[in-house]
Image (tube, rainbow, N blue to C red):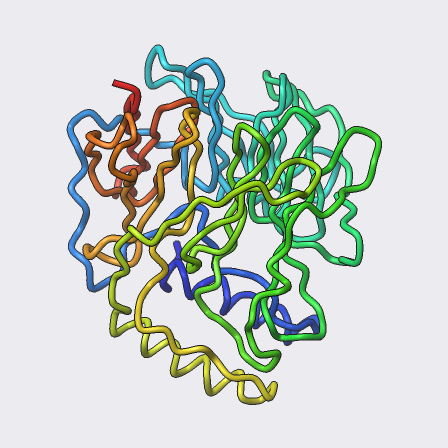
Length: 352
């Protein structure tokens, strides 16, 4: 169970990775699955409609097809399939480094009839059919990135677009949206490399985000006032602005972690940015009508999230409880809570 802030946790891990592998810090906080509620937070209230799943240890990423949810469980190195007819669950996958085995899976996405599971480090992409039968493994090849770290992926008409960070010798953070089409290496659609972050600075709350769009993708960083809408040729065709989202003050615990990180990174001649607020969101999900649901932090604690939608959206009046895990697919939300007797999950229709 993660005991550090969901935002700070990833950059601490990446810093450690950089020291061990002689790499720079170039990544973002682990945001897929909120983890355990911080010790200073009161337990989240679990709604009565949430069902218990004793075999699910973690909800790292999800996707859905025809109401059937595929849940990536990183702690168990398995994919669980949730049937809408009831609490019964089937699972596939196992821990390991062989064909079809999962080591540090970070992302799950459905692409046609294929279940795609991606390893966080190294660009390993596992393909399974809908029943969990392993098809093949391959490596994502990103131009100029020897060791890609993958944090998200979306399916589109031409292939799969991956959210990639590329650790290197520089400490400034950057990320890419890379489109992989059948039989070809990935090509860069968009990048945050042009961000005006000094080369000796580390932004601990840098959280690149990716979502599908009817004409391509939405891409950028969670702290930016506007995200870029990019078509599948890489051309910018608009913006999705988020200035209306509330920015919560940085909790004292995160301030203390920043102080410790600042001391550690000083050995690399690097400085840590000192934000006064949390990023306004850490993930966004397409709702199918050119609007988006945003997964946002709450005042309840660093490990809780809720969904919010801009006023005027067809689902703006939907009010969901806070949860440890929050995901959206096919116009429905899957929320999860950690409890002493297993993960509890509830699903909600957002299109009412």
